[in-house]
Image (tube, rainbow, N blue to C red; front, side, top):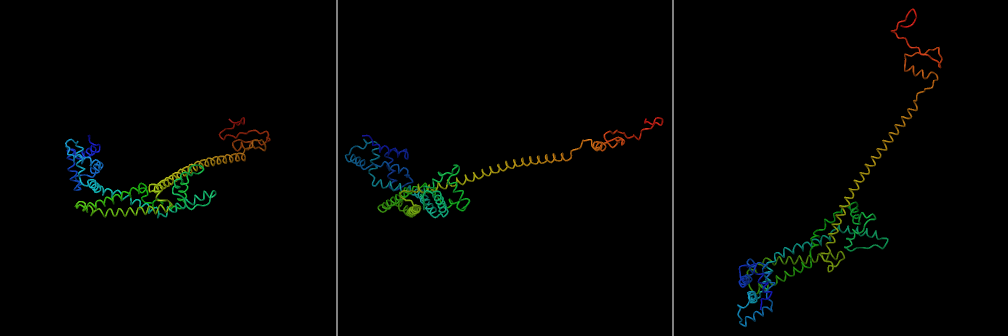
Length: 399
């Protein structure tokens, strides 16, 4: 019969690592390196690839039966003989699992440790932050004030209610409740405005699946136990050296896992939630969203304040300009009024009484003389004599 799909898949997985070897030739280095746990020659990614295609118990039994019946092995496809060779290896699945554990141990430690540290730090900082506590007290007091006419005071609220602060808006729809809270805190309690600085690693903790991390730590513990049994049953310098340098790392990781779990359970219960129904991926993002929304509200308040300041200065400038125009108009009106009054008080008299006109003319023309023999109504002009004119003695006239 044709080769089983798993046999072809196993041979296909092995060939990229050993492209110049025939399927049967792949078995020898694989088994030899696997027996020595030689990851330098047999990389962990290759081991993990082969582990998916190890012959099942049924496949191994069928191949051994074929061999017991002394049927010619040459009639088997290369892939079938590949599987037959693997089925003969004692404790092959255990050896492959140990090699995979050895190859991935350091990477797993480096991956899990920061996640546990983030949970520990975030849980401790959220629970111990006094600024956060006072912020929540302000929110609670404001909520009680707003709802005082509908129901009595409450003594707490669900953390998810923090997301609703952006949904409650003022009557003009220009400001949310969170904007008002940020404005109040900045004016009345400025020391609380940086409450988010006391919350450490909440963003990193929000991305951690604590349940999966704890399962991975337990899996490492099982892998280490398997390695200890193998080392106890079959002496191996490689395994003995690994145990000496890695057991301490695993113990520290396991302690961190217990600390992270306890710290998280404590902070969740502190806020009235259940650790079973509220994982870190739900709990910590509430604070992440609140911090981001609060910062945005503060920035928008500052922008609005600057815009209002610009508008106020613009209005003041317009009012000053209008006032200047009013003052100028009033000044012009005052000057015109004064001129009108001055003109009225000093208007000249043109009636021919008491020699007024003559007086004016005389004042303007000193060379003119009036004939005193004439009345005021009939007056004649007597021109003044020119000093240079000569008098004709015969006629008595000027010449």
